[in-house]
Image (cartoon, rainbow, N blue to C red):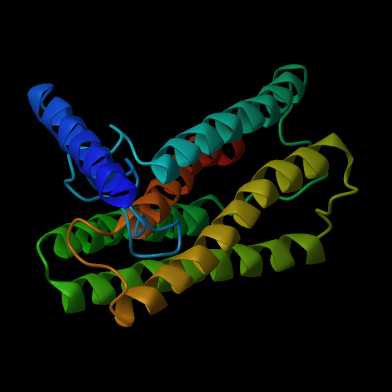
Length: 238
């Protein structure tokens, strides 16, 4: 009898909880899902980015990338400020004893990099439309264009080093290689990330609405691409 009485009390309590949750417009506590589901994904993975109304307004990975890009902007602003300080304080720039920078070749290289932003946008657009094979193809194009950019830049650097422009070539050489070299390292990291995203897309890890990894990689790629014309104008043309 005591056991039956206890069981009856428990059932009445559960019914009361369910009725109360229904009255306030929400499901029972056991049915509430966390804002971020178990398949949220990561910067390299295929999760996240769904249309679940319970999700936060912005995915944690995207928010983290925004914060990273903000810190990168401050970092490059410091480098650009130092370059401008040295540039303005010297009436003759570049110094006459150093070779001229390869303006035309670097312009062509800039066009390659800018076009890679178009292919990255096409890859994102294709994935949103469910065209996985097309998305994989444009991701590969983007990766190849990034490799081409780094290859041409590296080749031009070897030519400059052979004619005497090195990191130890005074302020001119130091500012050139530190500013342009830092950007090249960022492009290299982005290319490696792109290769990983391409491989995972090829294996079917992304799908429409669940492609936060590709989206965050695209954010970073657009950043390094958009930064380069500013550096090209400052270092090669100004």
